[in-house]
Length: 347
Length: 262
Image (tube, rainbow over all chains, first blue to last red; front, side, top):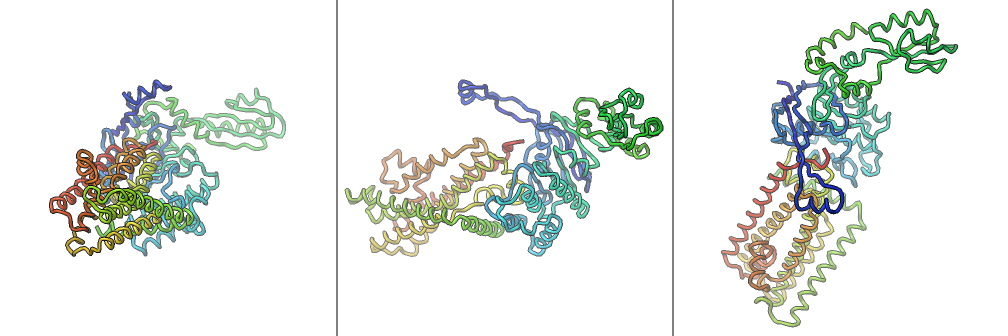
């Protein structure tokens, strides 16, 4: 069985609605009206040990809800969930010892104390022997450069420094599975990259499974071969990230630079013109004919420089949300797997 | 059991460090403790300028009740109130998640995690009041009186914990429960006098509905050797009941738990 197995998971919430104004508030005080929100609505997937899987979707899509169900924090309304053979919502200690949860928006570090104090409390809770604790801390220190941070008060740390310490606090017990909810949120680009490198390295070293949600496409591009796209509680896509790009964005972006201005009319015969500022231009060209078109363009217009780029991933996700993905892509992961296998040949 | 004792010691150590970070706050807290103990002392003394006994208790005996009242208040502000506050905060902010994913009993982690050392002053003040009262009575308790005192005081503390842990569990449903703990604090004010000072219905309520009598009056009776066996049994029974109720409420609360932001 897969390390993480989710079948037909549903999580519905009852939320109470309040009409605006004083009367509405009074009415809500005496008789609350409830509405059902389908946070997760029939989702199935399996994740194998050692995979890094990205969970993509707009706010309120159900990503965090799914993570919380996996972490045993929410009881599923229906469906089957098994992680490492455990049913998470039973919150057996044997299970709790084997995973961790990091939430970019919430912190477990004690605000007024240096991080090391929280680490020691966690050591006691997870019953980590001293020698192992020291070894783990040394390794995390080496990977995250915690050194000077450990003895500074948490409230005096920068957001990025704090996230490093949060990650360390969450990994002291060497979990097999990492649930990371927006681990890079609010961090500057350099720090985001540092955290990403760390996650990749940790996964390589320990073979830990990582399931991460993020708003930043760069996180997903850098870390995940496989993504789950979710919106309004439904799973829209599950499969290879590259293959998705091939499917929903069958074009490439060609950037051109000229030593003399070129007219849009001249460019139009090679592809869809996205922009033309005289000396520089961008074209969209069909992926399959990209090389052929480039050769023709080089011969006729003599650009100074010509480069290809993949379309921005945000566009791709938007295309999935807009329903631009053909139905057979969504329904059959097998198709995707073969598409993924074939993809490198086209590049 | 030993594991949890060790865990609790780790927590207490972390809290000590936390409190030492804020020395001024700690000193102010201690001063406040002394002040309130003094106020309680005066309030009882004032009554006895008018009368010899209240509800069958003379001045010195009533001081034993008062001493226990001060101690109990110290326990509330040292161990119970800080945790209740944090539980409310964690439920509201969703950081309770971090407690619930830890491989240890969630009720234990949430209700015994924090402590306020400045309230140790109350415990000392309360103990001094009791010693002073015993000395006034020229009475030294027998071994059996001491033993029943320890038993009933322990039962009282467990009852108190059960009540507060139950209130904390209610935060999962109602999120804001500060008023509830205020209500308890106000009702607990009645415990500065022996429960027999109150008339029929109130006495019944304070004994059996809100078992406040078991927090101060009953241990006081024990130490002055005036406790009959049925009350001792009742004290233990009520402690067990309070703990059971808190356990049950926590289990229900966790089952109902949905994080503040999803």
